[in-house]
Length: 340
Image (tube, rainbow, N blue to C red):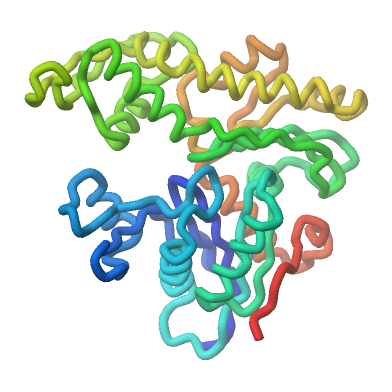
């Protein structure tokens, strides 16, 4: 009945909501089903994702977030409104205070779009925190200490490589290569090498089942169902783990190159700290088999994967919300807009 405080990780692939005092209360895909004739939102989250690639012409299942930023203002507003309602509960007398994560590389225009969407969706006060900072807090890195910590947050649309010290981002390299690029690479590879067209959901299943960035024991294969590009008929292709690794070579290489570029520009003292403490991976992309191994080989620096990397960002927001004294995190938050 009273005003609540919630945090939202508005990701390209998944959106999560954290309710102060209760933890993660929503974890659903960032997908919205829209009736193209009436512009009515038909479904959000899990229900909408099931419609991907299976909708009639009048209904489109879309991802309103692209590369970590808003691609469709109205649809994103509807999605955030649903997330706030699910997180705070219906029948609220007072509008909730909301912390929303944003990519470090967003422009001022993109930042204002997030502010406007949050207010229009029913938030009282909007605070924003950069995703790599939230991920570092969620991964239990010593962000407030006078030492360098490197976090690599590999989401759906963007990978953000940040060096953090004293509750501030010293430098950050945001590249638009992440989990979605992995899926696209798999789609293109199977299309080229097997003459079979598959969808993004199937590509994601392949990535999870046999995808890797480094060779591993007992590599197998996966039978993939798609459309034969020659005959137009349904076809089953057998795809080996080594093929998927070859498909992922380019996007994985882009992330490694981003890490190297960031290290090259890191001040010497902070670089020494990173050499000693290692690099931490977070985000869904961190779960790709062998990604930590290949980064270690290429950088000669120890790589750690955060506990529950998919939830690192939202856990970081949760620590900010649940902390009895937020003064330690004051620098990471920015009050951006108040509703009238």
